[in-house]
Image (cartoon, rainbow, N blue to C red; front, side):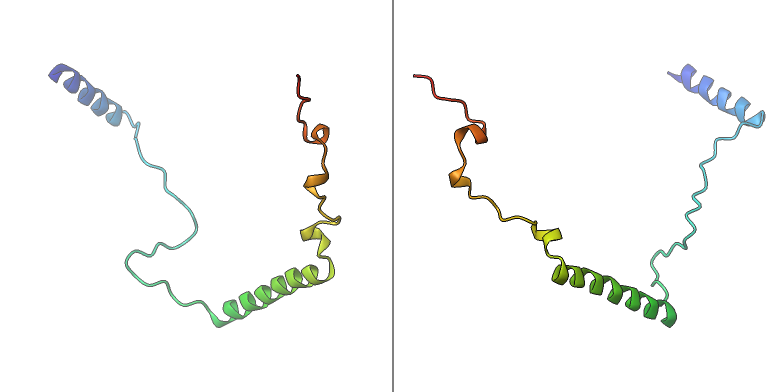
Length: 96
């Protein structure tokens, strides 16, 4: 076991001496990282634009619920399942 550890350390040393580096990739997410600190307040213009977009989206949803409810609730009446036959339900005939 000691021989294998010694061999692995020697291999790593020779690789690091030849310019092969084992580095972790840098995450470039484009956002700041806040650890144990409060996130700064948004600008007033950003809040106003968000409220405007929020209002437009809800107007769009509620207007289409009011004017075109068939898109959500369906265009036709739901059939009465008690009137369905065994053939329509896929139930095989009973063999006597």
